[in-house]
Length: 219
Image: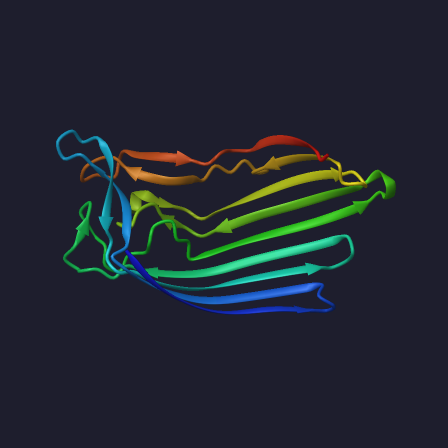
């Protein structure tokens, strides 16, 4: 597997360095990319995973990041990306019965984004209290390079909340988190398990909402 990588980027700061904006454009050309696909044992029908040579894909896209300290206590970070992928392979070649040429790469959302909003409350000798909300979103992806419709993962978003306290001297800290606030459980991937049918699909789920806390001490 080989890859030629071309990138062009911009990094900038303005408004007394309170705002940072970065932008990058890229183009990747693969040769002989190796990929995993879900399939079935032709004798037993059991689900198996195979390594295949998925041709010579090309990928291009844009990534942007914006970070702004709106006040001394309020910070906002935004990120977004666009990704176009296409497998270039012999039109006669198929994987698990599906032609690869023209397909999207696996786990490659066309659009994705993330955001963080963080607010810090200074408490003088009592340290700092920080509140944060963050999240991420992505458009649909396919679980495999064969782009099996039964293995398509719809777009989804995840939101998180956290609050933290740090002592004035920085020796002690407390943090509490709620991850996946709205209890979304999008699948990480699907795997079609039945030969020549789309009726028996394994789902590998993400975690639902969960809570956790952390205590830190620095000596």
